[in-house]
Length: 135
Ligand code: ADP
Ligand code: MG
Image 1 (spheres, rainbow, N blue to C red):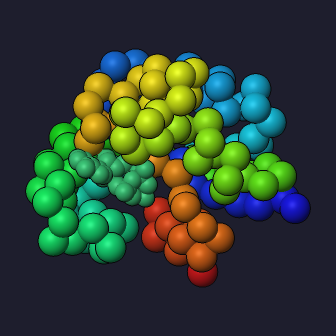
Image 2 (cartoon, rainbow, N blue to C red):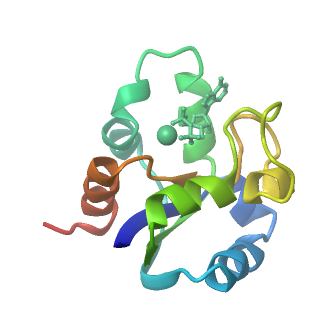
């Protein structure tokens, strides 16, 4: 089934000039770019986007990191897009992350891990609405 999902290229990957390589990987994997946005997170936007992580031990670091530079958002479409993008991005935990994934190639730390992808159909819809203003 064709699905939509959200990819964020996070500040460390923008600083490291990895935008092109990341987009090349996802296009070669069959994803179609439906929309793209270059923007800077604000604290208000982080509190909405990452609401489920407020109060967790890593939230302050995540907040600081996401505010540190610009982010690129891509609305992507593909068969089984949500599951597939999670797979090619790789695990959050560097210990269990598969080699060859985007995070294995471009993450600097557990927090500065180059990319975000939606983890469920409900969150994909929610996150696309937040970032692209869809309604
Ligand atoms: P994912 O991005 O893989 O879905 P989460 O939703 O659990 O991971 O966390 C959101 C983001 O918060 C991660 O991508 C990472 O940047 C940061 N993060 C998550 N867990 C940790 C942790 N244990 N230590 C530091 N940063 C973390
Ligand atoms: Mg997540």
